[in-house]
Image (cartoon, rainbow, N blue to C red; front, side, top):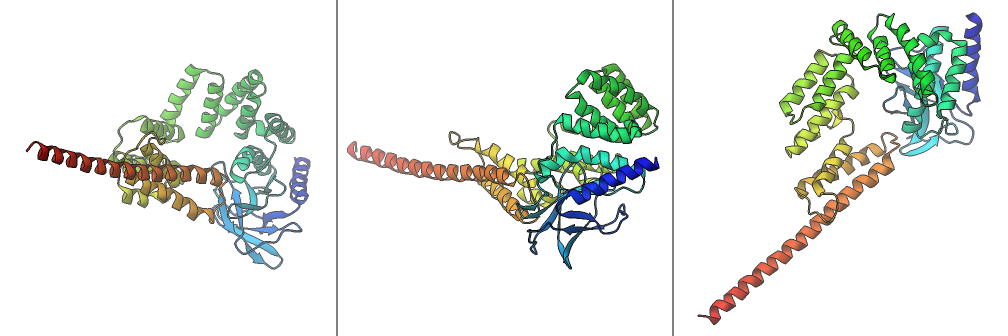
Length: 400
């Protein structure tokens, strides 16, 4: 085991120094649940300005940005990341401009490396994050299934115990894209291992294995057992969320009660989980034309600008052939979507910024065009009404 650890240690070091620049923990030990400081050594030829930031992902959901602070010849940034985070993938940005992305591969920072077991899990997490890194950081890491599988296989050679770890399911999903039959067989073997562990997360992985093999009876039976053993666990929470979305005609009171239930009964307090409910609440406020309430919960939704734009687009009718409805309200919320996007432009790197701007601008342009057309039609109607009144008056005079 000591030999394996040394080999993996050199893998980490080799990865670090093969990068033309470097990003690493300032202190050798990563502090879970606390803010950590990271050091950035720029490659030659790159000048760092005051407003540049480190943009990174620490999980599979979204990106974060922290300002770079000059410390002598180097730069630092500090951030508190998710307790579950094992790896950071980092680029250097200036608003929507990428300054340094380590030749489209990003900078990798391994966080949990205190022993051989943790190091192996951390290396596996990096493989699993590559697809998300390409999306959120606009990288060009090779994520072809063949490449992902080869990376996992190489890691499993050094860490065979990872085949009993939850990261193994990510490997099986990749393998199913190449050899579904073999992947499904291995998934059932993995499921047996998972069922021997007294943790809901492993029962859920066994459930995924049953889904891969379309074993509906086994899946239903296991889910019943999970719900009985963990009535407020992850599966119960997921089913609660599914029931929420399946319900039609939600009211403000119903949504708020569901938010409270999610927080108290299911311990669903993450911004991502609660955002699902607040998104629905904002749509409810927009349906009620309550712009003031909608604005108050913007920070609690996933993408308030997108919600405003989608609702405004729906009010337009989709093209110039429709006059739309509530066009003044549509104009107000469409303008707000562009304002929010502009505010975020300099705060955080957004890989979808350009496409979102074009989409939101198209919506606002359509609304303004419709308003002009409606105004002209109203003027024409007024003129015709006046002419009709004049004609009727002339006829009355003639027949008097």
